[in-house]
Image (cartoon, rainbow, N blue to C red):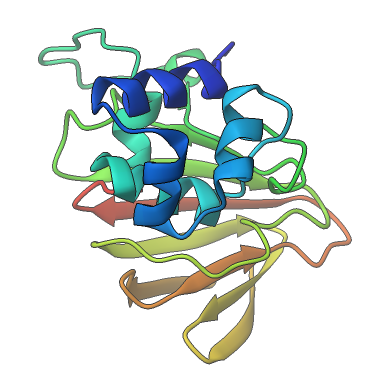
Length: 188
C-alpha cells in the first residue's frame, strides 16, 4: 500500500485551519517533528502519530482509511487486508506491520493481524487509546508492557486490557512474532 503519511497529515491539519505550531501546542509534539513528518523526512512512532491525531480529533483507522465503501462484505481474503501501519523509518517501529480486516472505522470492532520481526516494537513510548483490546500470540514471542507491568508472552498466550492504560509491544526475538488482536471501539 502506497500511503503518503506526510500529505495526509498536512491535509487533515489544513482542513482544521491549524498551523504546525498550533497543532504542536495542542499535542505536545514539537512543531519541527510535525514539519519533518509532513515532508516525509521522518516517520512517527505509533505513540507520536496517536498524539498528533488526537489533536486533530481522528483515530489511526480514520487517518489510514482510503474512503472506499464496503457494505455487507463479510469475507476478506488475505490480499484484501488493509495495512494500517505507520511507515517504517525515522523513529517508527522497526518493521512491525498491522493489517486490518475491513475498512477502518466501518465496524464497532477492529481486528488486526500484527507481524513483528525480531527487534520490532510499537515505538519507544507507551501509548494509550480509548478502547479495550485483546489478542492471541499465534507465533513467536512478544514483550507486552501494560502500565507498570511487563510480561513475555509466547505462542498460545493471550492478553486483555483497558487500552486507556499506557502500553507497548516489543518482539525480543529471535524469530518473527505474529499476533491477532481485537480492539473495541476501533480507536487504534
